[in-house]
Picture 1 (cartoon, rainbow, N blue to C red):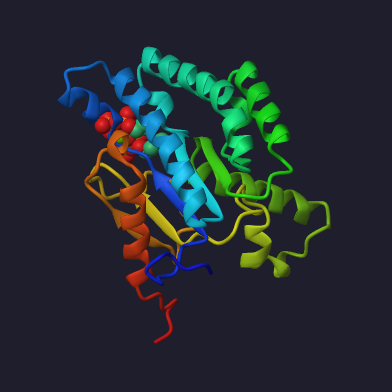
Picture 2 (picture 1 turned 60 degrees about the vertical axis):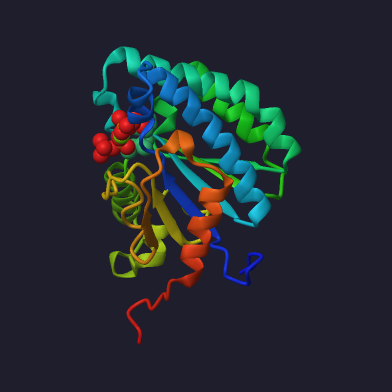
Length: 239
Ligand code: IPE
Ligand code: IPE
Ligand code: MG
């Protein structure tokens, strides 16, 4: 594990529940979409900082499987920003040696977005720096159920012995299979819940809830979160 400037351990895999865009906009008497736009700039800053700080994987909760409950106009704004982000940022991500992974049922998004996501992932596939993981149309319960269905099908087809279903067999069927173990989950905006994010993977992750609204999140906020992580004692049930 690399260490930060202060000698503290840097988490290999950080995941962020980027919350508070709406409240950020409301405070400024702006429409919610202005908060989402400002949140996109926070995404840029955070990716750059995470890659410079030596984080291996950064998972960003961008759209949950429950966010479909929002008004159609807000969903359209969010999808519009995602399209814009993918087209604008991919060259910069490439220059910064960033790879792209996707978790969630992202293939159910609009076909043009699916195409852009696949194109971006292919373009960035040979990079060796930070792995950026976008959680899109992601819900942990949905991810777990999809994994259970593949396990059940493998058992039915005789390729998996039910007695051999252990944590590793399950991990291997989750969307996060290729990623390092989750070390740190950060949620912004003061809410203290996981909102259906990485429920299995966070079993022994450190959780950090900060008051900062997502559009205000920056390098200093990430450095502070990593420093807090470095001071935590992880025991995994031992003593
Ligand atoms: C997070 O900000 C962005 C998404 C969930 C897509 P919110 O839109 O949830 O902002 P608040 O929680 O209403 O402030
Ligand atoms: C969680 O935020 C989802 C994302 C950040 C994409 P929400 O704002 O949707 O969560 P709840 O509804 O407050 O739990
Ligand atoms: Mg919210």
